[in-house]
Every structure is written in C-alpha cells, then in structure tokens.
Image 1 (cartoon, helix red, strand yellow):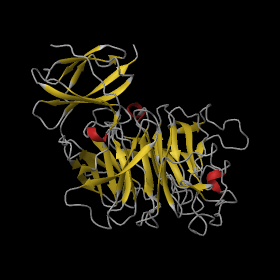
Image 2 (image 1 turned 120 degrees about the horizontal axis):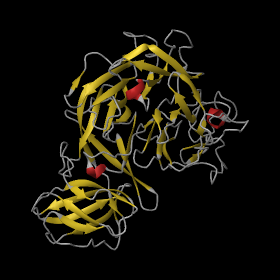
Image 3 (image 1 turned 30 degrees about the vertical axis):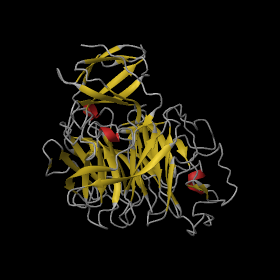
Image 4 (image 1 turned 60 degrees about the vertical axis):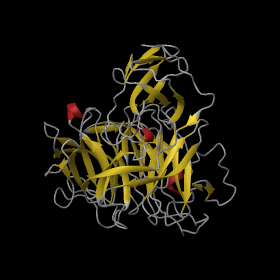
Length: 507
C-alpha cells in the first residue's frame, strides 16, 4: 500500500445540486401531508403516511406494500373528530412520535377538530397525545390527553408542523389565524382582523409563532427554563420565535440542528428563512411588518436592519405561485449529489417550475436553482398539487401531493441510481483531524483515478486526480476540519463514483 498525501486545490469548488431527481410512487393517498418512520430504529423501513383527512397509513418500503389497516383513523370512518373537507387548511396537519416511543408507546397529532371525547370547538387546532397497543403497531384512541389547544378565529393559517428538536423539546409552528386584509399588491393591505400589529407580532398570543414546550406524554406540558420570553410579563412563555403568517411546513437539519422555516405569503412574496442551531430564540421573522424581502405594513420605512430576520430565499407571485411548501435539507445516502441541499416547492404554479433547491455557499449566502422531480408516468396535471415533504430515519426524502406519496430515489445524471449503497469504507472512522492516517477501502486491488470530498454544507472541499493508486489507499486529514464528509472515488475506467461517509473529529 502506498502512502500518498492529499493535495488540496488552491481554490474551493462548490457543489451544485442536481437538476433532476427521479422519484418512485409508493402509494396513492388522500391528501398526505407528512411522512414519518414508524419507530426510532435507524434501520426502520416502514413509514407512517399522515393524511389530511385523518387517516394515517402504514407503508413498508422493504415490501413495497401498504398495510390494509391504518395505524390511526380520526376521519369519518374512524373516530370522526377531524374538521376536514370545508377547505384545504383544515384537517390533520402532522404526527410525531414521542422520543421514548419504544417504551411508552405515545405519539402526538396536530389537527383541527373536536377532542377525542367529542367536545371542543370544531375549527380549533389541537395537539393531542395518543397511546398505542403493546406492539406499537396501532393507535389506541382510548388512551389520550390534550396537550395544547389553539383557539382559531378562522378556517385558515394553521401552520401545524411539529418536530422534536435536538434538545428533546417539542416545537410547533402556528399560523396567524387568517383574516388578512384587502390583499392589495405591494403591501399596505389595511391590516387584518387581529389588531394594529397582527397576531404575528403580538407576543400575547400563540398564533403566528414557533412554540417550544416540554411535553410529558399524558401529563401537562411545562415550559423550558431557557425559552426566550420566560419571565417577560408582556410575552407568553411558550413562544420561541415570532413574526410568521403561515409557517405550514418547516424542518430541522438533522445534521446541524438548523431550522428551515417556509412561511406562506400574502400577495407578493413567498419565503424561506433559517434559524441557526445556536440561536437563543426570540427572533422576529417579520410578518406583518415585512412580506419576504419587502416592507409590507408600513409599506415604507419598516427598518428591518438588525431587528428582523430576513429570508435566505424569497420568490414573487409570478407564474401563478401562491403558497411555499417547505421541505428538508437532504442528509440521506441514496442521492450523494443532493447532499446538503435544501429542497422545497409551491402548491401552485403553471407546471413549468414546481421545485427548487437551495445550496449554501462558503460566505453563508444561498443559491437557488430549479429542480425537476421526475416520476414514472408523470404527475397528473392540475390535480397533484404539492402539499408537503417528509423525511425518514435514514434522512431519505418523500414528496406528498394531493393524490400520492413519492420517494426521492436517485440523480439520473450522476450514474448513482437508487439502490447503490455506501460501499467505500474507512479505517478509522471517525478519524482524527489534523493529520491522522485514514485507509480508504473501495475493494481489494481496485485502481483509483479521482477522489472528491463534500462537507456537511454541500461544499466540495477537495477534488483531485489520483495517479491510479490501488485500494486500500491511505490519505491524511491534515486539511480536514471536524465534520462529516461524503467521499466519492472513481475507479479507473468507471464513469460513476462509488462513495462512503467519513466522520472527522477533533483529537
């Protein structure tokens, strides 16, 4: 085995997200809005497909089959407590497993409708904790407790996506309650039905916010002591961030803990914002002072500098676009070229541009690019409205349309198709930063002609030709900082790379 140093390029090259991703149709469903793994097992293959109509389907990727009986049915053929069918914003909005699900069998559902005992206001939004059977394969709707009720003034702007953060706390996005103003382009809409500053800016309401609480299953929730407004008599303790109109879909970056929040606009702009993992909370994301990058109410002199968080990406209501659909930053293994890119969509549009990718540059700016998602037979024009994305335990992504659920599978231009596994191995892994030797094993005796390292942000930090060394091949980590890297190597005469994941840690 020859010992060869890594020779880094004098300038950084930046990874570009793929232009096309092929997706496979898993199943048809009525208005799916979320996809979750059925357990916390990292090798779990089955997912829960959450229907806006109240039906939560069980689908196993390993068998390619949907289980005949749903995991949960809150709809008309089940418990019949969901406000669904009046308009698209009403129904089940999300489902998330308790962090201790394997032991306590509890999960949380966000929906509009009655409590499980039939009480409460139909249009109000609720977070209800449910139990399951001992095998954790079916919901037990006789075991429940209401965690939180949001009194909704109108049938719209519900937000409604929930995640447990890296800190173990329960985060929930809430819309501002609808009832916006005249809808005049350019802002100055005459306000809305929620006072002179609107619910997004009002710290005395939970609407138009990102909330952070500590849940305790069937017992009442408590407030994390480090929430930003704890002790402030002019604000509610549950609030983590504010200034939102309708953050329908948002997500955590599973690698970094950063939050990506897509907020649906009023008349001119759709926007995606980021909150870094080290944020102490309390940030103001602008609505109704701003819509996207522009002043809104007041239409001039809104003075966003320093006081408001501006979006990393915004696009206007051209081409029929109307409602941003937030997605995820890809951290899976099946599509190496997509690694580190954030993808999102819009519920509307005239069919020529449905999806975007966002890639972070070295200076912290973001580059937007058109993304095509190809599916067998194509989407059904005008009927397959995009409503959500999902993510499983492996970081693989799913697309939910009005009619079906798709799994994003591979980049057809990369030569790495769905099903090509991580085949390159490293010893040691994790490796020590600052000069540790690492053996790369791509298969005994394979000759290598190129190697490329991509970091966790999607940046190519090393891309170099090799003078046909054989595998196993040893390199050194002198110029690698701590982090996770996708490492691709090209065998001699092979157009497509094989790849593996290397973790580098401080010694």
